[in-house]
Length: 170
Image 1 (cartoon, rainbow, N blue to C red):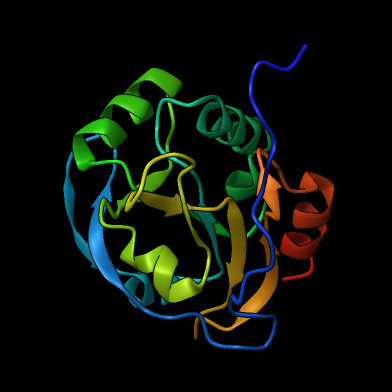
Image 2: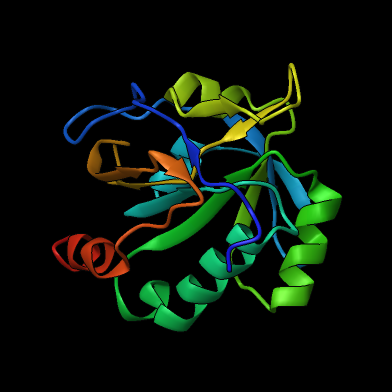
């Protein structure tokens, strides 16, 4: 029995394949520290899977990051994986430690990046509070979108085999 409601998120206007993903600068957290870094600095180093997810601590974040860690795309392919949510750098540090993750996570508590990407949604029953809908964007060195998946309901997860195929095509 499901103990939560499925929420229809509707259509989103997000960067499509072939378009340039918006650049941004936010605190980027790793297992040791955080510092302000731009997305363009990250993508300069090669193909990047940008993973938008709901806040740290919820089952969707745990599920997504466990799945990505187990699939090890960043170890088996020429791709780096970075996440972004509304959680603070402190919450990200806790998630990284608890999940034993090697991924870096952008912190965007005001949810401005998701708004710029067109994938924000207001949390049910919480006026004025929004978070990013789950999404994955595979970007090349120029931030051109090579693959995009955006949830249309919550909770919803990508077809990981489809994401993997896009990564392997790089």
